[in-house]
Image: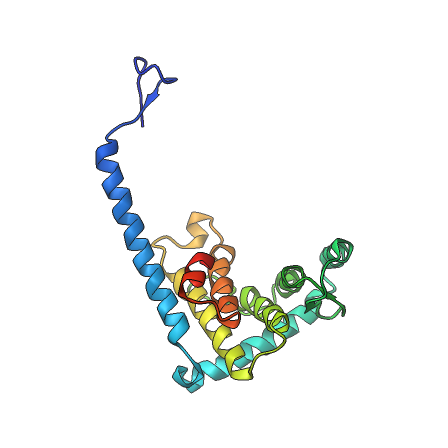
Length: 212
């Protein structure tokens, strides 16, 4: 849009819409193509396709995140969030780690994720300046309980894919978070968590696209 005193529309009128519409349409198609490629990769990857070092690294990430959650329980604010979620009530779907008891799956993920990051002890991808596992592990643990259990191999694959997606996305911007002021952990974490949980929930291609 461009300002115009003669437009009669509050000083603003459309500008070059016939040029912008095809451009925006092309950008949207390009983004969707990328999204479909990501979803294809998520849905076709199984345990046998993971390198051994990735499997071992993923196991360490799970253990590291559980330790961070245990430490995080004593951090300021965690008890308050726990009490808040308890007051909300709801279905007993997923466990509140260290506290015990079950609450709705998304609420358990909320509490456990806060504890995972609370003490800033969780692992970090230095180059991408992102904390991947604290965004993924609590979500996949909650999803696993919600599904009444999955195989250990499925659990490792889901976490590996989610962590990988967060790290790759954090490396994509030309300007780092220290300069832009953006926080890649939370911006990229939503996509990684959606991908990992979607894998556990066995979403089909269309559902996974919608989740992302």
